[in-house]
Length: 442
Image 1 (tube, rainbow, N blue to C red):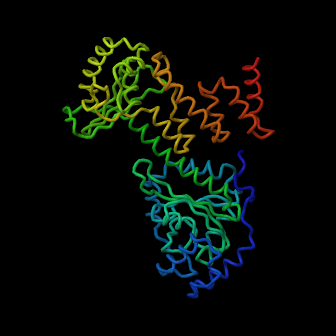
Image 2: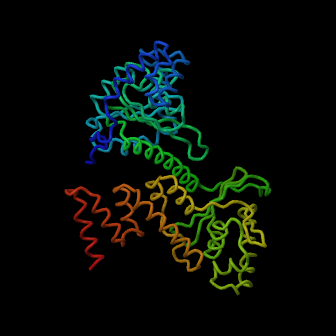
């Protein structure tokens, strides 16, 4: 069973500042906002205390219960983060939740807690201060706290003990980060970890931030899968070029790519030929356009193949006129008439966001694996190298082991040795890794 990431309290700031902050807080709530001791309080905390006073929040008292049991059940069912709760549990309390030493809460965009899970003893104690599902933990309801202040600032926040505005909350420390819609960037909710000093280490903030990014990546992946797996609807009359179109070319693990098009309220998924897939991929990758010679070089490996290219482009135009008129390529230079996404570029985007686990799940195999087009081979190598580099430099051992089970990672001895070094000495997985390494190096 995985150990808890909260088992150590290393790297916690010295606790001797607690008394100083408590005295500064006392002076602040008395109205002595110019007291010199407030200069020793972090700016993010002072600003939050001021907002708390402006919202007429008292320094004591329980947060309001903002949701009835029926409303809570309905929000839990309908909330966008509902499908990611298992992921949050696995990332933040991977061992026995009842013995993790912390509680993990997920709230909505207004600060209302929807899920509160974790250590049974800690949950009982924090429940006494109103840290329960249905309670409102927005700044304007309860004052300075990690979940409310993270939502107020739209960034991750750590609040340590006496920095809380509400005295009832001061025995606890917490780290929280907002979660955004991966496409619109609208705030969907907040993830919070509450406990003792171990809940406000630098590692705690990195872990909560990474969990929020992973959740955003999972939401994006779920949408991409739903779009790809949705049955094609009867195609309506051809939309004019000026109307919105969303097109994605699926090239990972496929030689005959799939073109997924959404336009004018209708969706379609069509298979394109290997050569057309190569042309579309090169044009999607080089959105600024390509000269005829350069496109010939990327697809045919021969700058003198212009006659062949022109004939193939005529056929591609006819196909796109039927499937997605806005995409029909223009000439001089060759470029697509509308933006074309690819699932390979989506993997690269997920890696840039730090959503390594989601990027790995989205990587269905090499880019057009049987293609020998020079441009495709170069891009195939770029995607594979980016995935490998990101995972080996920043991925967890679980993500690396999952990558090692893919075709791309199965024969990578360096990767297997890295996994071996990251595993605990008594891990049952070590024997299998040693055998694989020995086989590769024999």
